[in-house]
Image (cartoon, rainbow, N blue to C red; front, side):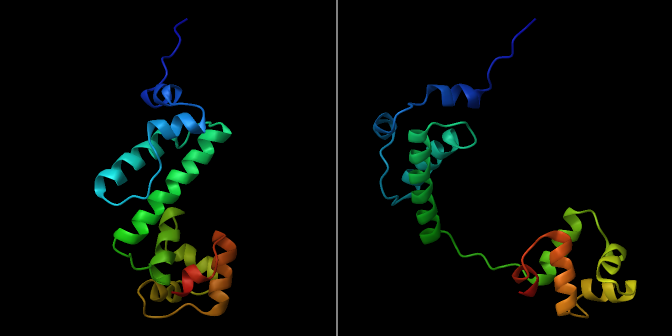
Length: 144
């Protein structure tokens, strides 16, 4: 019986140091000031993320992730938030639902559901409550 070779990612994590001090020697965590520092830090985050890590590796990953998050918050353009209607359309699409299904969820005539989806009619408070219960999302996603 043949044994499977570890994937590239698995082999890469096996080569990474297991102690915090050794990880720091490999890539010292520093504030990120440019694209090169960002790419190098993201490369380390990617190498660690998604694997079973020991406590030192987890701490190191958290530190690098915070540095990447800070750099991205300071340098990347701010994205506008999706509207409530866009979120509703997304939720329906992800759950493979259509306007007729929305009408059933809301307990309304299908013409009302389609008018909501065309932005000809807004969601009521009761509609939002029903949608939050159905999809398990907070109301603020649908109110924007």
